[in-house]
Amino acid sequence: MHMTVADVMTTKVVSVTAATPFKDIAEALITGGISAIPVLDNDNHVLGMVSEADLLRKEEFREQYYREGYRPPLRARLRHPKSRKKAAGDTAAELMTSPAVTVYPEASAVAAARLMDAHDVKRLAVTDYNGRLQGIVSRRDLVKLFLRGDEEIATAVRDDILDRALWVNTEGVHVQVERGIVTLSGWMERRTETGIAARMTSRVNGVVDVVDKLTWKTDDSKWEAK
Image (cartoon, rainbow, N blue to C red; front, side):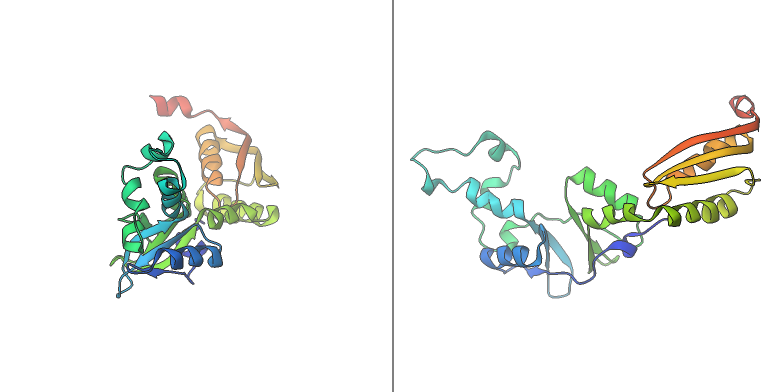
C-alpha cells in the first residue's frame, strides 16, 4: 500500500568526486537539470552533496566586483556558518555539505518527505546500509505520487483498506474520489471503526484528503474512554 523510496527514486545518478573542480560541478548541475549532486569516493560511498546554493556562495562573497569594504547582505552571512569557507572553495570537497542527508531505499516516501522538510533540502541521496549510493529521490519524485488517477485510488482504498486491512464489515461503505480527494460515506458497525478507516485511507498513495461522512450503528467511543 505504501510507496517506498525505491519505488520513486532515480537510479541513473550524475555524481562527482571530491576533486571535481567548481566549473565542472556547475556544468553537471546545469546539464543534468538538477539542483544538487552527490560527491562520491572511489568505492561509491556518499561523502556529501553539492547544491546550487553551495556554488552561489562564491557570488555572494565575491568582493572584487564591489567597492572596497563591501560586505554581503546579512542573510548571506548568517544563512550558513561556513558560508565564507565555501565561497573560497574550488573543488567538491571544499564546497560540499557533509555529511549528506541520506535515506534507505526501504524507507517510505512519507519518511523521505519529512527528512527533506526537516533539513530544508530538495533531494536526498539514497544509500544502502554501507553508505553506498543507490539513487536519488527528489521533491519532484514525491509529488508524482499525487498524480495517481482517481479510479486507481478508489480501487486501492476498496481493495487494500476496506477489503484487506480492516477485518470488519465494510459492505456499507461507499468510496468516491475526485481529484485525489476521497469521500467515505455509508455506515459501519462501530464509531471507532469509521475513524480507523478514514485514517488508513489518508495514507494511501495519491490521496490528497479524506472527507469522512461515515455513520455508525454503535457508538463505542465511550467504551474506549473508560
